[in-house]
Length: 343
Ligand code: SF4
Image (tube, rainbow, N blue to C red; front, side, top):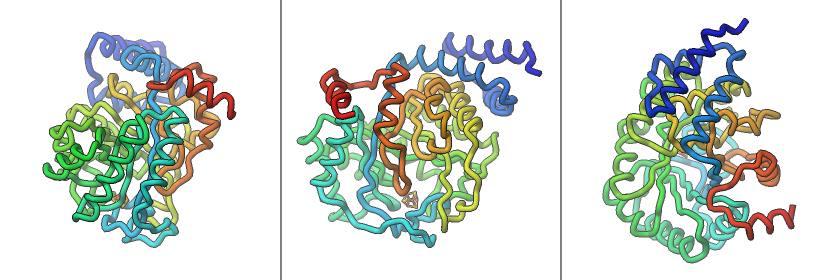
């Protein structure tokens, strides 16, 4: 039986956040451990935080996996790692024409940003630089969509060069809590991930960094990740939920339940009240509860396919956003009408 006192305690944290305060790590863990009975109340509070700090608009983004498979890194969740035997496609860089076609389509869908994602430890060698330069210059000329990239670990020189090619945003997930990272990857370090965030920001890039939940980490480690992101001042946080891939070390794990996913989204909103919280991979596990991500405090969503897994039908996502009467940031009347005409 839900206790009135617990609702009052949740509300007290909400009021503190609205006044500019913080949720402590202990409170974050307490929220995460609350019975599902309290989830609707937590979501209502998270929704208020989203509306207060992020407004009425949501952000939509999309990605392209420009080079896939045989990756040097051993991330336990990833089908692209050359350390695991999986059915992930293997290909080298897609052409600029393919990339531009994907970016334009994403812009028509209403996406404000488009991410160029490439496997690997980081950007290495002249050929890779030349390819990335071509991509970002071509994107700048072809579309007003925001130019993002996720290219692994950065050093100062590479970050400056990418900025010079026209890159605007850099995505680099911490993936999980530092105390769990050895279970996830041993070919690069947590410290390199943190340094990459600092370097990207110093080069004038907007940083997007979050993680994947449901990899076997504890609830306390989920809060640890949120606190690390908060301490780093990250204001764009993608949240993924493990989609267990056959052949990977995490292939046997059970996907998170819809209620757990919603609770995590709400608690991340409590921990990071002002951040852009974007829901990405694994949201298919929400099933019928898909549209509740925004009521749980999410302020963004990645549409289209993910790196090695299929996303929802874009038309379904766009209809869901329309039905919720949410506006897409950077969208135009013209684009809305074009979408309606083809739906
Ligand atoms: S997550 Fe990225 S770095 Fe890790 S194995 Fe997959 S492609 Fe490589």
